[in-house]
Image 1: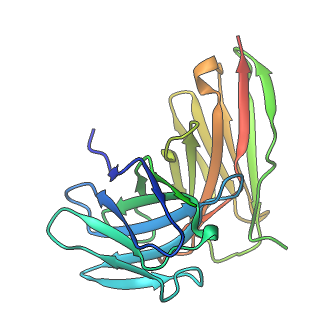
Image 2: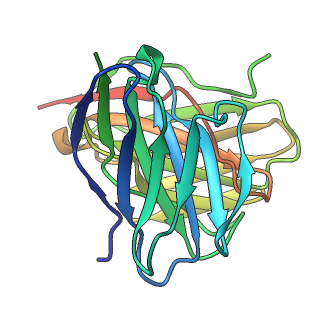
Length: 114
Length: 110
């Protein structure tokens, strides 16, 4: 069964450094998403991406965050200057279309900021 | 009032029991309702998705939506130790942003 893959599984970074999290969505999916889950808290929406542009973003997704689809298969989340509070699990998801079509999630990247 | 509320548990049941997991919500614009299972250090795995009120069955799992009461349920029949995980409800109002519950931690005892 096709799946969303994320790399790396664990990223340790010094505060203030830039980090890029990578995702390969399911190949025939057109909509891509990033969510985060701080330890012990619920999964929270960050951003959705379609047709090479952001379609929706949350208040968490400020100027320090950016997303990109650099080629036909990868989808990335960049955090420009990491803060301690960015430590979380980051999940990538994809879907065939928006709304009613279900989003399929990867296993996440655990980001630890020191 | 939180947009989506879910009892965090933990919920412990003996193997073979019927498990009932629930979420309530406040936003009447939600149209699609999902249940995900999340094992430790893994991503959410889609179990069920439903549109509007009614029941949907898939194997041992039944999802139920009652829009008039703003209440959704997931039933697991003949529960197995391998069902031990955190179960997340999620909802969407037709855009892109899923709103998740906090998750209910389930433990099925052999």
